[in-house]
Length: 380
Image 1: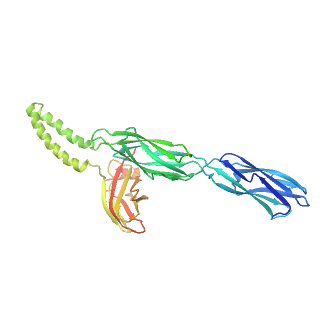
Image 2: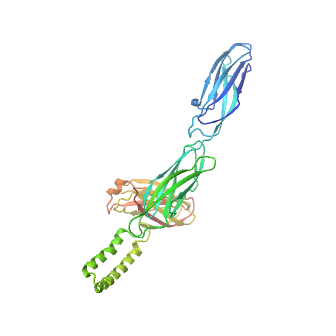
């Protein structure tokens, strides 16, 4: 500490918004009997955040001078809303290694902004599994409540998590499952357009919306529909349209319907492409082989539902060339994950190509006894 120097700062505390400027006046007085030169500097702030006018001054005995400190933190998410302990340092040329320190409390106030985007925006299938990306572009954390609506009120929206906490500069992906309450029995898909709304805590950022679409496919595939229509057209051509002939045609058609109903019972039900029972102790891993269908799916949806005390299971997919898709984890509250398939590996697959899915109990304790189901998806 310098005995012959007096330093005053005004004000001693400042509050400002990111992007604004606050000015602090620094007064230095030489109370000693000799001429001295002084250097004014600042500790505790990024150098790009401030400027000092007249940082060097030469003072006669019993004289004083002022310097101006202009503080301007940038308006960016990295400028965290908080108090910063700033220190004004005055150093003497005559007494090297000694300095005078004066604290200044600077508080950056919060500003709120975020962006929301849905990936992909459109899915075709019995239900849609999306990723909703939340990007906090403000300098304070946001709690964002998520809701979904469709004009017909015929869709159910499940967010995981429902109300995520997103830190400044953070991008967080939220899993969204959209399930239609009504699907066409056969024929063309039913398009459901919906809007997602992210609503932060009151007094922070205004709500944001993101559009999306689910093309709900028919419960009866087109090839099942053909089973019904082809015999009817064939019988009509063979028997003609007379009353007696139509009765014979109806009898034959009834047999076809019975057969189709049996097929319906096994095929038409909404069920995954592959199911596999799993029993896993802590640390245990199982592997199952499967083939990719010929319609070039883009994604593989894996769902594991189990009983037992296991908390987390880890899944990984290995392509026929030996490369692995990065592992994903499921839990009892979030039992489904989506793997993005390599288009080149899918195209090169044939009926003999063997894909492998690994499932491991990575919980510290507790068994997992349940079922794993796999469903192939096509996304545009």
